Image (cartoon, rainbow, N blue to C red; front, side, top):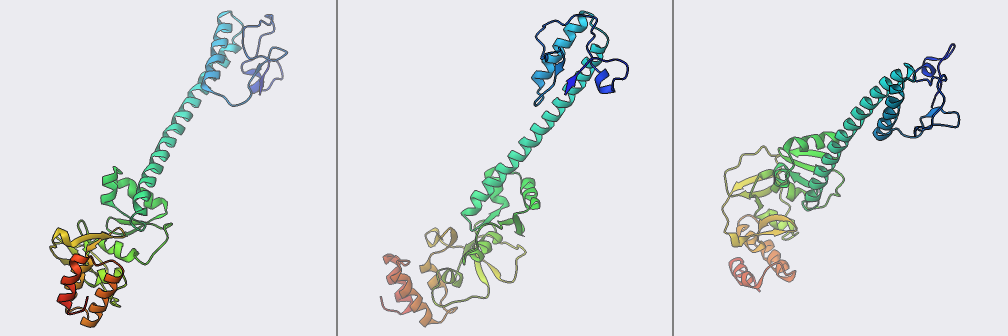
Length: 278
């Protein structure tokens, strides 16, 4: 875009900011072409606009026509609009970057939990609860239950339902009884409901496939298998007496011992209680 002198028959764009030819052209450091016209090329920046305004003010001070005053006013408007745009853009960029950071933090946690993440995880990571809701609204993060979400791009596995059951049961929850055996494919069990223990009374709204039992377990009987809190296999085998057939329990104990899932210190105790052979 080139700004030229005004005169009869000129368009409004040409008449704004024209150069008065009654005064000789001077080399005053402005961005000018071969015929002394002010050139506007490339991307405008605040620094360029401020430089041009300083040049125009110098010319106006030397009395080079009222048209320079009009162009100065126009540049003032351009500076203000460009500043507002850049400020707004920077603000939006910061907001988007912060949202992406929150999403990345939650997803990293979810990768350790079969794609699941909870409101408690968000609080521990410093992510506001409202941001979790916003991320879910944008897509890619599905709400599974109260305070439980799952990233839909994380591949599903056979252990997802066990992790979901523990997370939906609340803080301190862990798998118990035949759910532990099912997690490890022991005893040919296929429970219709996943049993989850919790040390405190909990009444969450859960689907019929999850059963929450209030149970206190010694710390030594608690562990984490593949990222999922549960009782030890030894504790689960003992707790399944009367729930699973004795023959299947004995087979599960032998298979667990063969796979190294039943430590030596627990093996004798479990086999003695189940009436099996070591």
